[in-house]
Image (cartoon, rainbow, N blue to C red):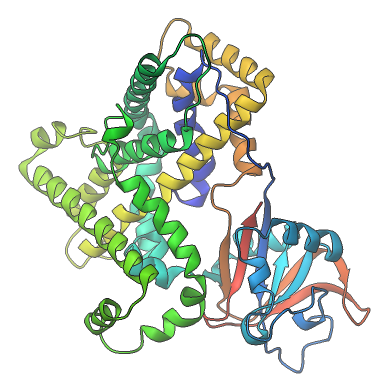
Length: 470
């Protein structure tokens, strides 16, 4: 949802608003397995040039034995129960690990901080996401579904709506949503209370609804949910959650088949083929994509009409024209047709779907995780409550400047995001031949010291991956 450089200042401030009403409550989290997150860039580079030194070759890196000529180690690495396998890889092979991919494709899991910095920051333009095609197909031409100049154009168009000034305008919208959440949970406490016994509440579903309403009002100027009772929950959060789980089951198709499939016939032809074949996950993904697209079109047409009618009509909308999409659409309308910064309608619609998809699941997961950690560490919860109560000083809603200046709250938000990143993995491939330096040398299979890796230019079907995982 948010450009990378804005992420650290955006999530803590919006998350902090949600915690204000939790101050007087103690939450009892259900038992769950704990873990911690690490950043694992996975660099894929089979087919090395003969002129490369042995120490450069990815095949010379230490790693586990391939379990299958067909899938290599992918079955062990890419599944929901792979955490112990990942931990074993780190302990046995160190910070740079080779794994075998599809039909012997060499891939590398990287813990090395210097290598990660080069891929993510310093040399970021040399690496591309491998999920662009699938994202464009399912969500649309938002930031996650485009590359190159189109991506830079959208980033430039979105810069004004992620300024500090706009963040301050958005905070009252956050407080309004939080007040609804407080009323909804208070009603549940009152209606479900049986004597003085503690109650268990499934907070992830409530956080999903809250996150959708936050991005709905602040991002789209649209209300999805009044947050009153579970019976009145909007279906969108459930659909987005299913989108992720269904997509994870289709990883092999996305990675190795999709790009080739799209070269066969027109989009209309491929759609008819998909409708005809007996593929449950494919049909489910199609239906969820259609739902998200139609929802975006409905909101877009409503906002477009209000903007055409003038400021008075915009002021009557949710968000009063200060939401992200209203500002983006207004700026886009001011651009001349054919101008370099003018976004197509499909790009605006794609950005709407991207905002909801990217923000809802990540925000709800982060909120639920923080609540769980606060329930598990009551001394931290008590200290945080004291800090916020002192900042309130009788005022229920804390100002933006006060909110971002609370050191303990800021530390909790940042540390939780560091240890439990809502986005658990990302994938990259190299756009050109490059050399990836390491912070410390490693010993190759042949005994040589490896100080840098040669990463060859790759096709999207042969990935360079970056992975953040527990």
